[in-house]
Length: 164
Image (cartoon, rainbow, N blue to C red; front, top):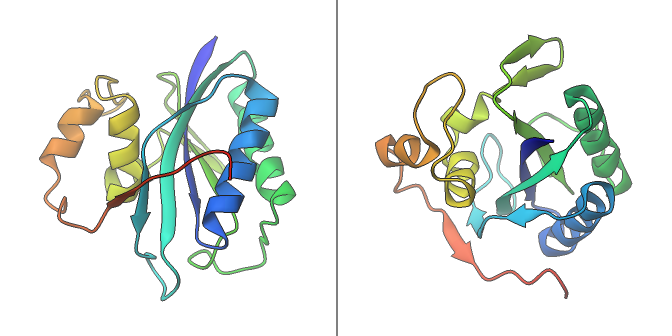
């Protein structure tokens, strides 16, 4: 079994779409562990705030199968891929880590660069697995978070209940 980490975000009916996405992840992979949920400003465009969190699960599926399943779940939850890269999202599921795999192939790069680029990706991931070692930096996620200089970015913890 491989442990997988996924970033989960939405700024279109975010509570409902995140619940739906988590339900789909549970349907596919069984037990899902979740980080706290954070409200963050939209990055790269003017838009409604996002809710962001990280999820992890174990699977025997290949990395390509997991990536494909995440796309299918996004589609099931109304994701419109014709929209701009930086724009509103009903559901965004990004594969961050697949065990300690380092991979660079068309359309799939692991670990995902956004872990080191965006506080709204790293913070929930570090909350979920602080001792996990990033496969290319050699630092724990907690160390990577502690080293960030933009921790003042507004990451507002929000209470979140899976059942409405």
